[in-house]
Length: 620
Image 1 (tube, one colour):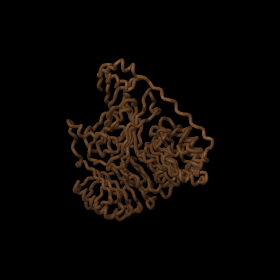
Image 2: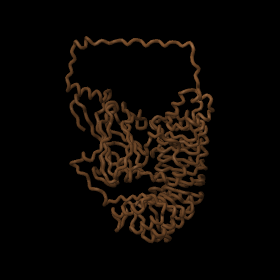
Image 3: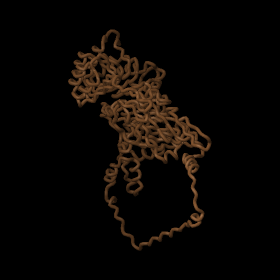
Image 4: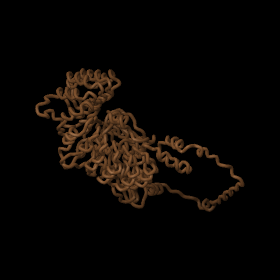
């Protein structure tokens, strides 16, 4: 901080003091790569590379959208072209300021920032009741070399510098063009100190007029005269009015509704209602079957939601992801809205802060026909959710509770009721009161379900019953995420002796597998193992073996030759004696249809020159 006397401007330099909310994270609470790492001074300043102290989102690139369950369910509703955000986080400043500069320190695979919003800070505002969000910068994602440290300095408009005192700042990202995980080292904020009752423009005026003397001749002031503008002529009343020809009157309501249904922007759609009573009555809500409200998360309130759903009796798919900030939607208003759409089959409530036990109970009561429920990070991870409240949703086929905080009784019975489940995603979910929950869930699925096609147990240790799970669902299994899991190769004792035996039996039992993520599981895969699994997995399209050992160039050629449908292969940080940057480039040239990720520690450039840091700043 630089401070001066009372008649001078006080300029503050500070880093994010607190993480308020976020959409996703690679790590978990208290672990490496978590969103909490964005707080404070950057830990690995100017050092390009993969650092456990960095902030990392869960996904990057476009390959995530090609997972088997994405292909089947797809996005809900249309999204306007201007909304391109995929992830976000909100940070709080210790001292509110009129921002003049923001520096985003990106340590790996930069280029994903697309929008910055700030809250208009005027009084002490509770964390979840921020008054308004105003956009101060927006851009498009860029494809930049991942092995590059970048200090990104977005250009803040002058009117934003002078009128918005920032306490909370929201950063939105689209990492679809990033070649690898986008890692953030920290954020530095610079601005004029906020003082109640004063604006930044007051400081600027004081600074300008104290240094420049302006004198106006008295005669010039006396000669200034205000000229009154003549009143506009009154309109001449017409004696005869031509008959208005409204050709929409001769069209059936169904045709008009179908035409207007091509309007993808919800704001434009509702502005169209104001054109005439005909449009208001035939606006395509009656025929609307899918609705995406995520792009309008800043403004959608409970009263708006109820009015929309009341006019949408045919709605079967609804996306409310990110909605409910500022307490705009509460559990009570959510219940009132759901009563109008009892036929709903697909519901997305990702990152909705109003989701609690009451909201889950309302969903089960008002939407008994749900087959798809995306509750990723619902309740923002701070609300403890009782999973037993969704037991009445017996038709569920897809359930995503990843990154949620849940509680379940000691006796797990969830799949005693949800017997139709096909896709169960629980990566990074924090479970309370039951430390053996995930092993018990596997056993519960084995005993009650049939035809399970995919599961996600990202970062869940000690998965017992895994072999029984594979034997039960091997024929139908298409997707399996065991990243950062601890797979016990001696369970049952003595049955598995090596990774070769495990992968041989596993690949033979899962002939329809399409996506396998073994991130940081560190399997030992030799040439003879590649020969077996390349024959057993003809449909494999995505494979992540980050950190695997005993990997050889010959074995990878065997894999890519046998698995002809493979489009994604992550070989980052594999341990090998004959793999280097040149051999990875050769592999990519030999198999151009497969995107090969090969970030290695020895490929990272050296730290930046601290004396010439400005050379690495990118201003836009």
